Amino acid sequence: NGINIKIFAGLDLRNCVNVSFLILSISDFAYLLVDYIVFLLNILMVEGYRLSVEPISFIIYFLTFNRLFYDLSNTVTCFIAVTRCCCIVFPFRFKTVFTRSRTLTIIGIIYILFLSEYMPLIAYVGLDGVYNAVLNMTQTGIRYPPSRLAMVRVISDILNKNTLLLATFSVSLLCLVVIRNALSSASKFQSSLVTQSLNVPELSKSVHNSTGDPGRGLKSPKLLQSSSELRVIKGVSIVLIMSMLSHIPQMCLCYGKLIVPELSYGLRYGNWYVLINAIAMFVVEVNTSAKCFVYYRFNGRYRERLKSWFKLWSKMKK
Image 1 (cartoon, helix red, strand yellow):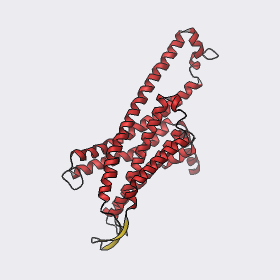
Image 2 (image 1 turned 120 degrees about the horizontal axis):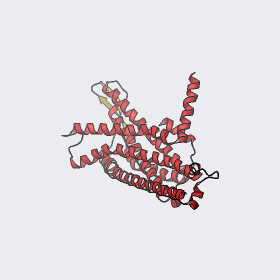
Image 3 (image 1 turned 45 degrees about the vertical axis):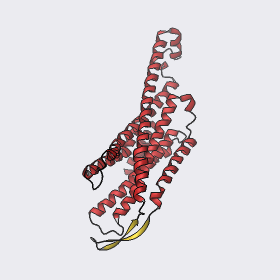
Image 4 (image 1 turned 60 degrees about the horizontal axis):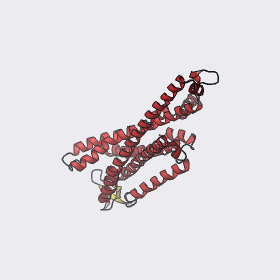
């Protein structure tokens, strides 16, 4: 994701797709960074290191940021799906609507809304000394208000894990279906036009080039541009599919808790909860880390920039 940020920052940021993927890479990078901090604190706690801070309270605090960046990436991905869907289905109406400034404004509003939503969980805390009887030492821990559990249930569980996740999943799925149908219809229509132009002499002249070569005549600038846009759409579609698949374990866990209340920590099905939660976290980490392969496959400028970096790195190594 660090490489993604560097490359997209150097590409044409007048393109709203590049801007959206740059911001998505930033939120993915932040998610994985917080995830790494939580993982490191877990390791230090399990191994029994004598830390000046109380790990569990800090892990709980960092998990708030982890969830914040997860929701941001999820919502930005859904926004990318909506923009591509509108530009494909209504190209003349929305082609000039999603400019760089408007894209930044919309995503900026999304960031502000999520920060405002999570601010009670982030700000309403304090530091306090916690005595650790096992290590026989006092550690600095984070003190939480009694109302925090209720706030977590409303903000994280009800609003985001249940409502937001289902809404973005449904919208992304709808956009994916619409994009697929639109591309299929456009492909059939274009094929029928080419067939008619080759069968009708008057129409065939418009397809042939000036030398009379029908094969080269099909490679007009318009078709080449459509081919480039098609690669972008395919890349966006694969990112959408990856994102939706990564949400499925999380959705199973969230709605499973509604059906089976004992599916939680310390209850009857606590072990199942831990297992499903671990799978959900692993799938999300793979999704946030593997987008670079999609960018490399379907974004020519991304691929060229990355290859040039590797060539420069090889020369410096020699």
